[in-house]
Image (cartoon, rainbow, N blue to C red):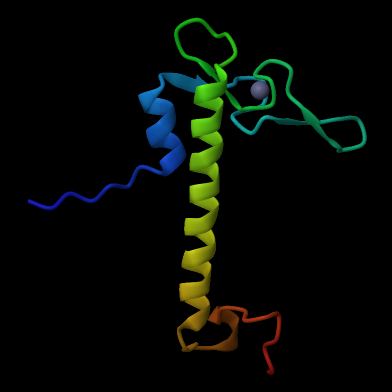
Length: 105
Ligand SMILES: [Zn+2]
């Protein structure tokens, strides 16, 4: 029986290394400052995840795995976007997928 894996790479890695999303930055690793600059979160050392059991920072091996999973997610997202852009548009222009920011309508 085939099962569909709906888990993202980051979710798979954080489950494997027993990490949870940082409650301060909500898993992003960045905070909005006074003038909306992306500041690094001190609570999780700008990783976005902390150890589930202790709430401490993750070790460098776990951080590397999370960063690798994030790059993998970005690649998958870009690939899906390209796949969608290659398909011919159908329906009305309101439902078209933008291609190179040029709609010609
Ligand atoms: Zn954080």
